[in-house]
Image (cartoon, rainbow, N blue to C red; front, side, top):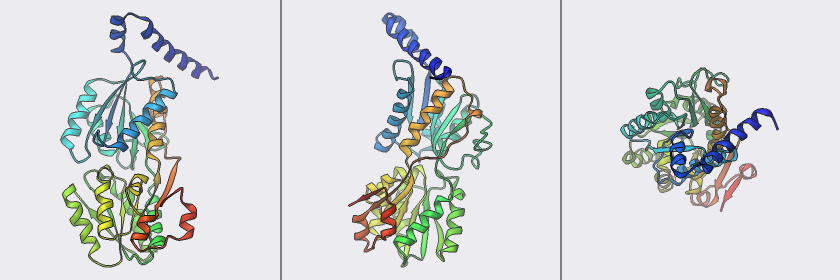
Length: 336
């Protein structure tokens, strides 16, 4: 065992043991001095996907010796992606607690937290284009108080379009769906999407949606002309309203490709992207290092290591498509 690992585990164990051995009053006083992590999620608390990500972060912490209520405290706040006023209020609330570090979910949350503090370290997860957003100077040398775990590289957008054409070769017009307010990084995905569309002789467009009630009209408008297809951008808004988007794509018989498996589990045609739960589990390793004295500027931004191609065969058949054997052979999971 390396010396720094021994010291860390000894310190963590000592913290927990001291709390357990002291009288109740002293333990209560000591609990106020526990290391504290503020967590700002970009989903409502009722969202099971959000709960799974927080559970993965907790699990990652526990494997590193940090047990909530014994030697670490988590302060979790849930900000719906389309409620900027709530997001700002919750960010202020977390920063006022002066936690040892902050875990931020997504681009709008990270930007809002940075408006409130430039001193508390921030670890982000499930975030697109951290360099273009101005959060870090570079992937290898973040250079400030922010680092973390990014979404897929932008070239994934070209792969989504290639998959769509492979599965639905008659598609001639494809829109990429996102909310500009929650996806200010849209060009990060749109540029490779447009480049791939040119090479595949596909007409590319952007489908902007600013509120939930706009989803139906935006999807319906794109479905009006024949041979249309849809790609859903990684975006906390589209992820939060995944059930509505999947249902509308089915209603209008639009073949669609999604960035994450939870869309396909709800009936989406297929998804290809990173395992977000794993990214939150990995974020615990940076939280651990920061709590033990590391600086965010020393921790390079990391990309995902786990990717999943998930296919829904029921939806494939409902759309009258034939799933190519080459795509099935690459699938990590096929939902019958």
